[in-house]
Image (tube, helix red, strand yellow):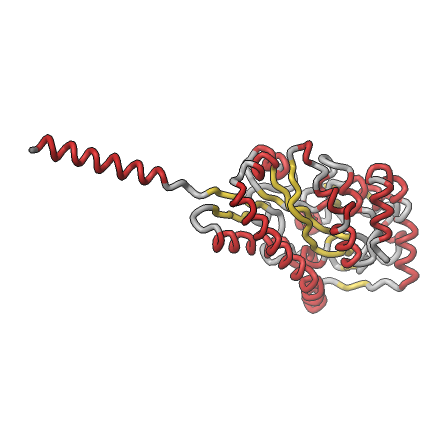
Length: 329
Ligand code: LMR
């Protein structure tokens, strides 16, 4: 009798263990980014996490790591390729090592507004660029807007000559380096996570960013002047590694793509609002003085910086450049 009971207990335990192991653990998607949560990218990432929690409950869990908490500018692409993180959304300027094409977005004064950026991105040339890093194992999943960049500095910058010999932090883009060199300034490539300290300690004189980054990173508290130059766009590409993304079960990937589409649409909507709201919050803070350029002053910047296009037209592709220019009409 005792022996029978022991056998029964063994069988029950074995069945229980088999059933438990049959319930698969959810797929974990780590989404790392370098900005604050209350920014277009931060809001997009959190929305993606929430949509996935609703639609793929028990199957997929998205973990979001903002503010360079997990990986930053210096290592996020390598981490993506190693599978240590699964989604990132770097600024387009940060893909230079993987494709020359996306540098088109860094060309100064190329797009007149976000409608033109959208038109180019959604057209055949912009869409083809999304897939330009496949051979490097990187899959582009969608563009995301932030806004147009303005110049912040410790001294007032009104004309290109005011920028001469000043040190400006830039992202890792040779186009951005050429843009500042064109006005006699000194570009310094540094990760985003270091910008506040560099500005605060006056190791550099200025930087370029859209309003949401200036506000959420408190750059305006350590920069006395902001010149509303709107000289270039700062957008992102949401990317994964081909190995991870294509290795997902097809039905799950389809749902994830839907969640990404919706969260990117929200991020884009928010980017337009944040641009206005965060600019106003900075003005209201009175910590930094806004410099509005006259049409003649702005034209002086266009004339000084536009020759950079010629230098990079081969790298970004002449046809792409023509399509980008045409998107303004
Ligand atoms: C920067 O490095 O200046 C920005 O690209 C950061 C970001 O992701 O908005």
